[in-house]
Image (cartoon, rainbow, N blue to C red; front, top):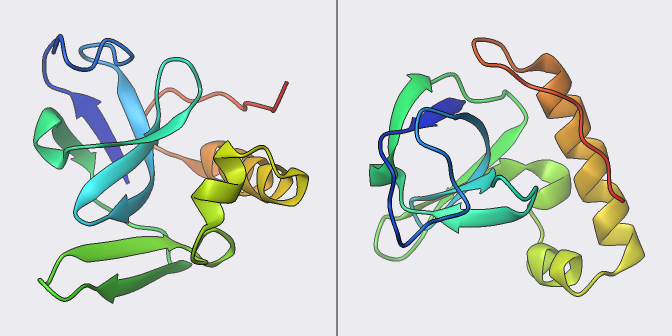
Length: 118
């Protein structure tokens, strides 16, 4: 799934208007993407234009109590995964970058480059 930021938004200075972003997952209907600093943050879906709606076959999709949607690749779909990632736990960081690099390497319809943890 690929989206493009519609326009500049002062609340989200870490995103570039017109930039393509690969969606990593969906959490409570928000989109998790790598922002311009390479951080996997959640952003409201309304900020983006949908460029390529195809979702990866390996996403696990669930619905919350209020019918909100959650969808992630299986390795990123465990409770507390992103907390562990942001806490710098080595296993979560390694899993995240492996999944993201694989995803970005196969993204079509957008400019993409491989990224790595530094």
